[in-house]
Image (cartoon, rainbow, N blue to C red; front, side, top):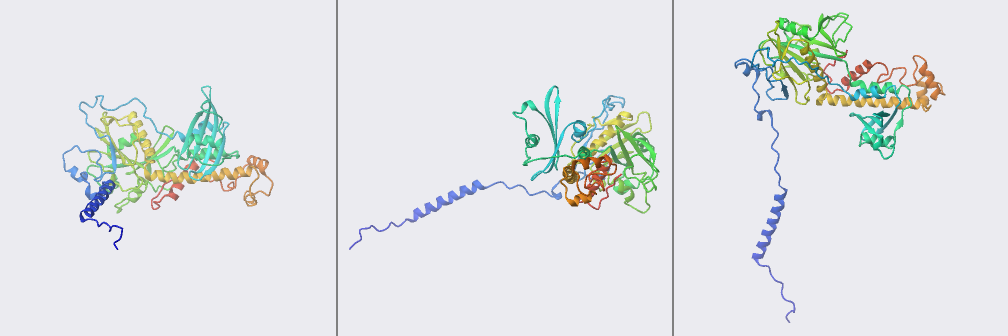
Length: 503
């Protein structure tokens, strides 16, 4: 009996072929959609077209450029034009009457200017993401309007803002105030600071980045000198170089010198007999002059000289005659910027100076801007411009990657110490210290507010657990904080072999 069901249909070969072609087309479209252009492989030094070397340039006709970039870059240059189309007495030679602007860290001075000695409130806490926080709040009346002045310190930076109270729907609590100045704050509460000396600790932390002391290298480059060894072996000073040093500052005897010494030996004469020093806008500057530092016979590298200049951050290169300076001539992990000065018509009534500036790529531009052409007449205006440029150069170098990371680690360590001192001393004021802490503080029980205030009135006593060994961030002078900052920099630095000179 035949089955009532029809036999299954057998697919034709043509149908199978069409099906597979359709599947391949669909997969191909999906793969095309996922395709992307791969980035080119990273370039190596062999792939770059190098800049001409200093030796190639010296084979050409004069005049030579004042600065040459290293063959594979890594630096920027300011002040390339030094051509005068008319007489030197023309307006093209710079003699600007305006006072060059000296950069400064305004945030670091806010607490001293607006909070210190005035009614305000300080708080502290720990944020899981931001780390230790120290927060200052002050009620201000500005132009007959009520404001909140807020200053929040984190391990990365200090946030400052002035909030008109009229702009707020309701008066905020401390956490809400902190969020007004930094949205990333995420804490449950802030603790009030109850220590009478807290303001001195806080202002010392804020101003640890401020220094009124600077040291700059001054390197003498003679005609056709193109290596570090040649630069550091110069002993004699040409009349043009002597004239320039007189412009920089006053020659001082190092023996028993009482001003800022910039790491030079003022007791035993181990760093030479004299140097050049000046006071400029309430700042002290010591110059490390290559020809005045000790010269060692048989030492090709002249390590006694490089020990000081190689640890500076900014240096002047002085040129008697037209010879290019290349920034990588000097091997140093610290030198990040150079101001190159070339004398024209030296030791005359018409002495001129051509100026060019170079710095590493990660150093931001710094003012004052060089004129075009970058030529100056000898005189007080050039002295003012040059010293301002040097100080601003050092401030700019601190923003370079190496110094910025170092400063962040130093700041984080100092902020943690500030937090611990505020917490410990605030707890001591409330009588909430442990028995061990009481023993460390020389206490035998009791205490709290009355004992703490009594100890503040007695010379040599402090309620702080750090009282007998001194505050870890210094409740004394700003100079102590500056020295500690330098020590922290040395201790935290990954480049341990390099010498940090502290004076």
